[in-house]
Length: 461
Image 1: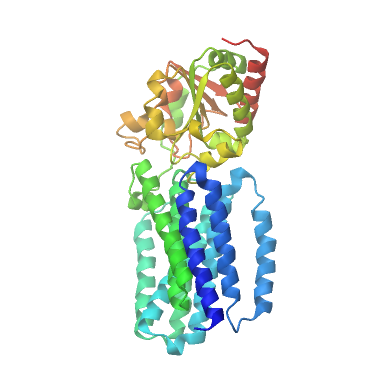
Image 2: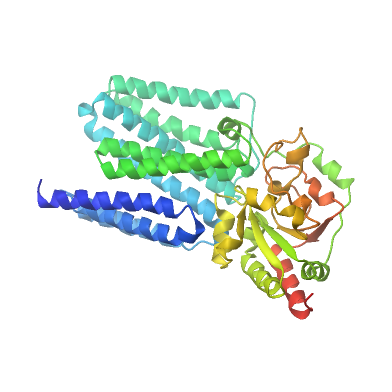
């Protein structure tokens, strides 16, 4: 083995090990930064090792690098609230790359492809194509340039499964005879359509799970590309990405007490008929920032429940100021994180870490639920569906059975919310009409800022 090949293989081996360590370290907030750093070093090594191969056309690589930088730098500077849609776009770009590489490889090598190579190439192109358009649709829904509600029609599941079935049949025909080049455009076009049709019936409430699932598809397509290009590094990296995305999807579905099929075909998130009428007949109790500050200052134990409302208002830094003031007053303040709060896995953890909230104050759902009965105040900031007690009590509710944060067991519940409109699941929340619930209507950042001002000018308890 010549020296250059040896260096490349060692570089790939080290990069693979760093990718594995990166995943392990990113599983905990305390080691997440180390995990990101390991992943970045691994990717640099992977790119460096690839550039050492003989016969590369560096001019085109440089053009690609410049284009990627032009697109990537602005994407890396988006607001934290836009990270979910930026992640979806990253999946889309990765999937597009996989599809283009697979297409180029087919047209360059179609007369020499073995049945095995054609099989994995077909899998690569199908997964890449549907992930590309599916991710674009997910990004559009998250950015609200597309309707967040599910778009459904009669026979939708039959159409979707039919498109997937036709793609598989075409793939089989190409495996049997790779020279049938006229079929290959269909192998790309039909999954592109399927990607769109797969996402439009899915509501915004399921987007965290969908993002994980698309991440899994992108990883699996990259692993298939590794087999096609005979790249062990791509196989390892793609398999890690695909399996981690799949495991995360399972965890997210479990957190919502739903199956994959229910997520993909359940059209979860349609506004329930009669909700608006029922809402008008019920009353809620509201409070001012001054009253809320007084209640918080008198408490011994406060649990903050963040949700997308906190993210979209960029209120995490004000929440940190409130945490500091209450902690100095001797109040025990912690944060309860639901696995599907926000718009992507770990969304709340990222936002609170950005505001330097201590890691040991972040509690996962099971741990937090054991504390609510001893909690004086549960302060819910924009977390709608994950605090809805209908999930425990109303068998007719579409979220029935979904594990929630039991904030209604706290002595007092305060909810910061712009209006009484339903959350992503499109259903009313009985929590807001509870006798011990106070609604704090307003923008999360502004309202928490007002509470901070009141606390700063008040007296300790």
